[in-house]
Structures are given as C-alpha cells and as structure tokens.
Length: 131
Image 1 (cartoon, rainbow, N blue to C red):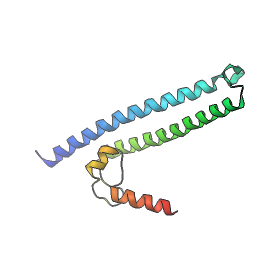
Image 2 (cartoon, rainbow, N blue to C red):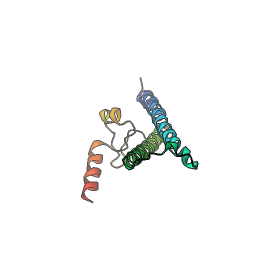
Image 3 (cartoon, rainbow, N blue to C red):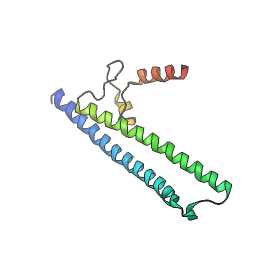
Image 4 (cartoon, rainbow, N blue to C red):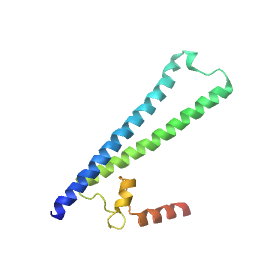
C-alpha cells in the first residue's frame, strides 16, 4: 500500500473524529444557549422567574456566569475544530505550525485539533506563563 493512500486513510479517520467532536461541541453550545435564553425570556416584565432573595439572586448570577464561561470555552473549541478540519482539507493536518514537524499520534488522539507538537506547545505555555 502506498504512503499516499495510507496518509489519505489517516486523514479520513481524523476527519471523522473531528466531525463527531464538532457535532458534540455544537450540541453543548446549543444547550447552553437555550438555557441562557430561557433564563432571560421573562425579562419582559414577568417576575416569576426572578429570585426574590439576595442569596438566590447571587446564585442565579453565579450560575449564569459559569454558563457564559463554558459557552466561551466551547465556542473556542469549535473554532479550533474548524481550523483542524481546514488543515485536513489542505493536507497540512498533523504538522506543527511552529516547527513543521509531525505532531505525535498520541497527542492527536488526546487533542485531535492540536496544531503544535508537544515540545512547541510546552515552550508556548512556558513563554505565556513568563508574561
């Protein structure tokens, strides 16, 4: 079997993994968005959805902030998944964007949308911590 066919099979395998993860991430985003919309639907004057006690209002606010945080994280993940799919279609998937070396299979199994090899990702995180 030629390397080209094998490479194509590997890309198809990761494309399938990424598409499944993208679908799951989109479902999470839609779920969080729906909860947020339900929480704000009664802002038209219906006070039945509002907490009357300060502690309850604080809890509601805290929960809402957590949902927004998770929504932002999932949106960022969705963006990374889309970029990974783009790299598959451009045949650059699995190549570190910093050093140009192949990203280890172990890493891609854990983070299929990884764009850096372990060494470059570690260096990037170390540089980020220094700032």
